[in-house]
Length: 324
Image (cartoon, rainbow, N blue to C red):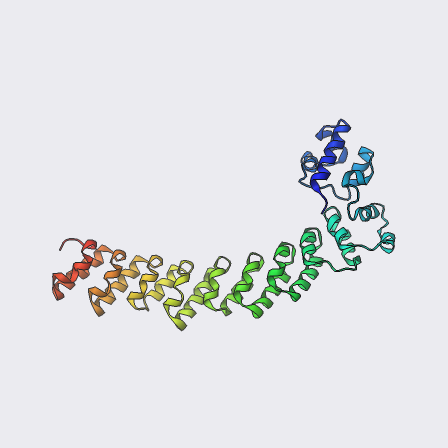
């Protein structure tokens, strides 16, 4: 693309040669002070409307501002002179010229160039010009790139693609390559499409996409996976599953398996499960979770254990109970 730093230095040089302040320069050009300052800092480049004004203001040719031998400078001149229709029959438009001058042209003009160029633009060239192209044109190019490659291949131009096309490609990619293949474009895919695909995906694949899946769908998928495969298959997703659902599932599993999810279930449920397990199997079966069971419940169960099995039965939980 055009060298913004080189252009900014030239503009600053010309302004100083004409003894203009930045404020005077901005007023003469019809822009605000911040925009004029941006021209000299290389933060932005004067567009096709301002370039002829700059050339007239400083009484220099266009090349003096943009630079000699810049690819596409004659294209810019033809648009300024409203003569592009004739120019395109005389000269073949090259992709490098399109890429170079796209930032200073109007979207319609860039669109015309893309239509005119005979050699198809490469993916890399499309990535560069996408910010300066109309959305419907970006969509056409993006869909072609996707059809020839995969969803990851359009990630660099995703901000400039319509939501409708992003969702369309995401659905197709899910069917073709699975849920994990959506992660490259997840921030741009609608939540409704991500949720729709998540419900059909293998539960284990959801872990890379949790920030983009709705909480209710994660809960729904967790319940379904629990019914199929048990708690062990969902424990790696425990931080993303609601406490209400984890509490519900915790009551249905073997007490020993709670050790994998205890930081994510409520104290009340841990206590409730501890009481149930104690009645079934005694104090020894719950001792490994003693640090997470309330002192009141442990005191209660310890007294029952001493009455039934003697003082020795509570030796493993002594640090967590009051003196008996």
